[in-house]
Length: 316
Image 1 (cartoon, rainbow, N blue to C red):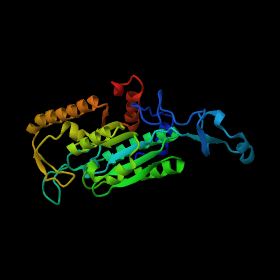
Image 2 (cartoon, helix red, strand yellow; image 1 turned 135 degrees about the vertical axis):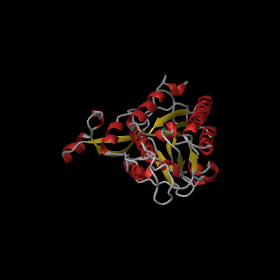
Image 3 (cartoon, one colour; image 1 turned 180 degrees about the vertical axis):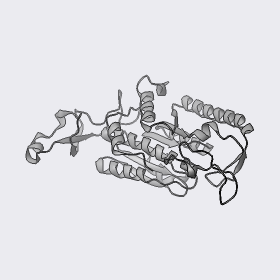
């Protein structure tokens, strides 16, 4: 199920994406790509939408066609935006799943996310968040690229500008598939070859293993403005199972026996891991945000932008 609806994208369209680090093509102040002034070149027309700057309406075209169009302009100093989405098998975990009963195939009690009444998964939630960020970046005139990270089903859309490229990127996010494991940066040579210019990089993952943190280290060392959105669901946060269960791995790991007595040690270890990674991100100027997929994607996007705004928590 996709969470990327027309209404959702319309709500996200008016937001702006700030840049936190000094990058080529960025001088100071809020990150804006489409502004009036010197150094701008005409890019394309798009239909007028309520709230657009009336000064950018093409009145001559309106007189000929009886329709209103806005002139989109580009400047030579856009900051590329790269969106990285973990599409390994662990991102299939759904929101609000509950433990299923005995399975017909094994006779064991499994973590039965297939029977969840909630149809969307981590990857659907992450795709919606990145679609919103893509909308903002494209509206500001920035080139936007997408990398779907998996060792079995990788996909790469180079960073490009324009409404046609944006529509292609969003269409890709609406039909994303998950499989395999998260590769290491050293295995993603195609991505490394096209990310030579410093950029704003937003990575969405569940960050359940050290491989995902390796991605943040690689992006940070190469000089990008890096942000990480770490997704989880209720099961991972609470292990809300009343009795014994077999927890089945998503990426080929063997099923693990669980008893309620293990809950406390698990939750403590999980909290320590998250705190350790958040501490590393603060020390290396990487924006870190944890997000439960049971909430609305709008809330996560708004929190993400507030943290990036001058004076927000992402600057500290």
